[in-house]
Picture 1 (cartoon, rainbow, N blue to C red):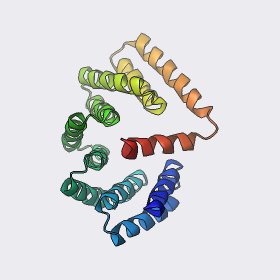
Picture 2: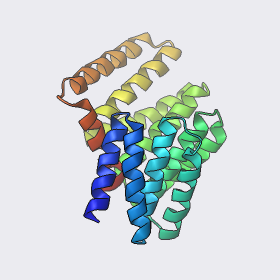
Picture 3: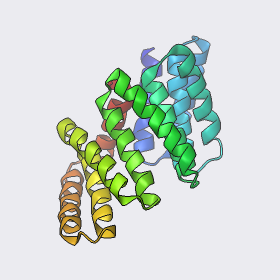
Length: 217
């Protein structure tokens, strides 16, 4: 188990650094161990993370791995991994402009996150729902969901998530001609970006937040 967990952690770190080849090498080794030891929970997590790597590198294998991970996590009633898989499958469809399918998946993830009280997953789902409303130009709902997400991430002190939300809010306010708030949020976005970039290793921060999101909770 220690070796398996270490390989997963190393894979996630490489993914955060956009070194997708090394990420896949470590995650596939971890997957092999999970399969050999019949550790279905870790198998599902490895599959969804491998799917996430493929998703980031626009690999066609993304959906296959994500759906398999979802299937296993559903059988195990592994709620955090189910949420992870649902969110990533939703993102897959959103990037292909299949907004209804993406929305259904995000809403399902949100429901599970609310039922299990996983705050960070609630925040992520609300944020992603907000992005769909923004992309489909329903700015009132986009603002509502993004602000709900902001409340959660402000409480969690997640700088990267707060930065992303401020960027989203700036775009929403700009689209609705509220330029004062658009500027305020853009300014805050820049401040948060600077704070993150001042850290000695921003990639390490991303990796730690990533691990926290899908393992710590």
